[in-house]
Image (cartoon, rainbow over all chains, first blue to last red):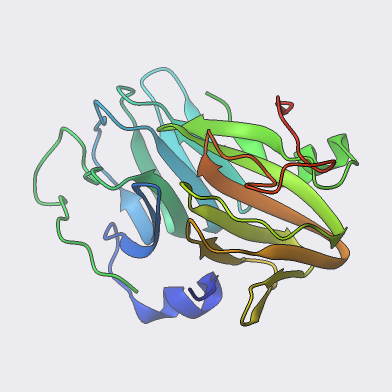
Length: 119
Length: 119
């Protein structure tokens, strides 16, 4: 039962699109991730997903609009909604999502990460 | 499906120890709350609870120690663990917890809040 400081955790890793587990509660995981460039279009059929931006600017593209998140802003992407995160520059993101959530959702491929590291 | 900016939401309310719902996902709620002074000792028998400090300093007292959270630090209090939040000055907190979680846990009383407002 320890506190987590994001400014201490983020320097510990450098790989993009590879979320690290930093907390677990009620069947949900808290993850830290660095994003840069474009991810893949995907959706999570059964899981909602929260993106909270800690540093940088994150665009989340949807089929009908793009939402831009600045630090200290968050957004919940409901299950079933196709989205594509885009980071023109490196962005630091906190994710809240079900433990079962796969980063690429229904678009399994090179960017899919399983067995995530814990920080 | 809108983004949430905490600096826009917190000025909308002034009552302490009265969490406001700002998001919902996977059976969990995201809440914003202002704390000041001491809360009551309590525990949640079935629910883990996450405290993320956005502004100010939050002490979380446990029976054997106190953890002090600064902005951008979070902590997960596991179910069953007695705790008492203490804010010497006003603190802004983001909570992430199961939709079933009652703010005072097993210590129902004057500070108990049901039917929370949504911002």
